[in-house]
Image (cartoon, rainbow, N blue to C red; front, side, top):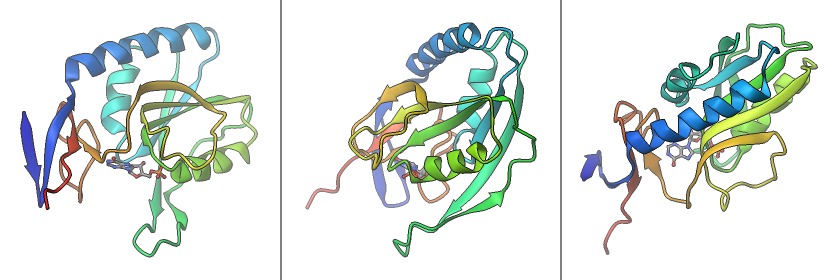
Length: 180
Ligand code: IMP
């Protein structure tokens, strides 16, 4: 199936059934790894809200959820990232699991991880639905839970947007390169 958002065409890449199956497995792994620990899941807004919504339903151990929102200035290539909504919880001695929709260059994640590390958590791990290994600029040692490794395609759906649109699609779609 194909969809169109603004000027871009997209092809189906991952169906919701496949995503759900993967999330179920990640959930099982998290339940084992954090048994008796009461971890804090921190969703990185906006894109992660759909993934975290499904993931948290697979978590059977006691846990807490909060969010952080950052703003990146990509247009001017400066790579500057600032807080749009800071973390409101005390994370000292907590087991923190950062939940991302996608890790592309890894710049956003690096910024979020530094902020959390400054609070001295007991442990820090990242759970991302999608990971672009060929785009990431530096190795992220906290990247423990990865849903799917994908090529450097631009993707939308399941929380991910193109110009603010497309977050509502259940499946994930990849951009079709423009024909010349
Ligand atoms: P970073 O390059 O890893 O810092 O990614 C920054 C942010 O860009 C991610 O959290 C997403 O919100 C967004 N992003 C990166 N790649 C894609 C994509 O393929 N589709 C939609 N958003 C993306």
